Length: 223
Length: 164
Image 1 (cartoon, each protein chain N blue to C red):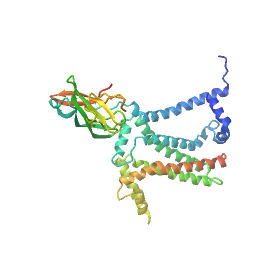
Image 2: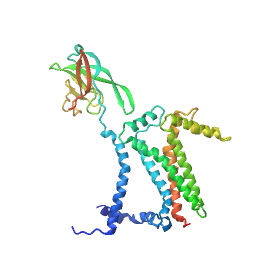
Image 3: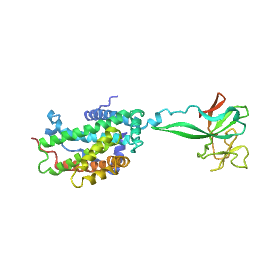
Image 4: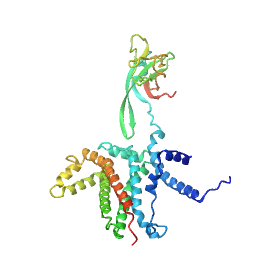
């Protein structure tokens, strides 16, 4: 049945070469855990991507109930966590996934560093990776404010104090982040926009670049 | 039943099945979370004071305003409701919702002088007899919603909509 549908579409649109191009590539022996178990360290990048997918999915679902506003934010989070079926699990996925993503990203960075994979000709992909790292930290930072509880509020206060301490332009960046005179209504609105629109868009673009480059250059050779 | 399963097919099925299982454990909580409004029991309202004593209810429908404590997700508020209250031929107290069953406009009793003792909807000229039954040939296809009523200490209480 599925086969027949696939063949019907393929016959007309010739889709096989498209996914073949993406999926068909050799996995060298030195990065295949089936050959050398220690090669599992090469999985961290893929695992990071997997966790990012979970973050995007669970975030989309959370946005069905969440309201980014000083009156409703905390109430809506409490409601989706305690009253909606599986709420604790879906929010838990997003909450813990955020930490796991950073950990995986860090492990992936360590692997690339200690295997020297960032060296010529792969410097550019290291740079893209570092940009991804910053975007992920930005996602963690902006997402932290959204539940609008004491922890969220004071963490953001501290963040903005740190930003303000940057020489010369700090005050301006801080004001830009805060959006108003206090950490309040305008801050949560812009943090929400940054968290669900700007940074994810940037992340997807950078991930695309990261993957295109790795496919073009291939995985670095064995140690 | 002697159809052979090739090694490749076997691997495809087992790998696909395992991947599907993992994907569903991930997706199930999220989908269940999203469809919760459909599966959740509606928070029904109880009986509330209508601001009227039993002896004030007459044969003529009179419009009453009353407050219901409503909950919308995490948002709790006082909902202003209205109802037409009267005693029907058998002496039973009836409370009708003034929301037209056609497209939800508000009907008025004797709203049109041409149609005596009827509820009239100004939007599309929908009409209902005094007992709430829709007049055949006018837009509404169902009678007006009726609220449950009860009398406590001589006071009228209004409850949820009577289920047909």
